[in-house]
Length: 135
Image 1 (spheres, helix red, strand yellow):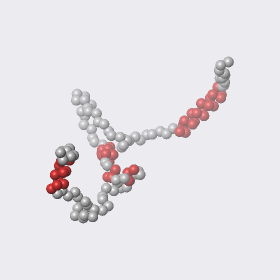
Image 2 (tube, rainbow, N blue to C red):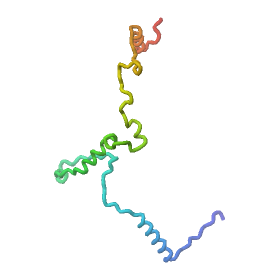
Image 3 (tube, rainbow, N blue to C red):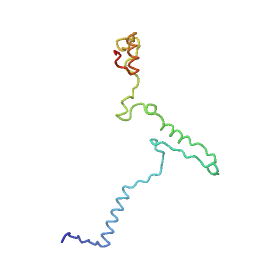
Image 4 (cartoon, rainbow, N blue to C red):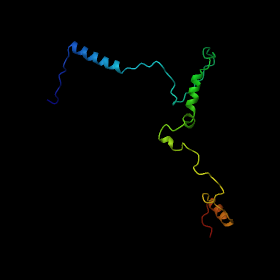
């Protein structure tokens, strides 16, 4: 024979009922009922325009201050939301202030390009794309 067929063992109703009861109790233990819902602050909320001729869309409703505060808080940048970093990758660039005060007159730290007559002439020629002018 090419393939061996397995015979299905038909269980009686008592064993089948025990199996279903055990499965039901496991599902009941793992089930959690959520009754309080809120907006995910990580997702942007897309507004849908109302229909102009619909009477129930044109009714004025009071603003939900808690919802508006939640949306405004979610739209803020992380530096304004939290006093310190929440993840390791946020540490890069969290402190944006320079470590050394930038004094422009200090020539130890600042090396500016100084243009004299000949260097200014050569720089303008390079900008025009002419590399060699000894022809």
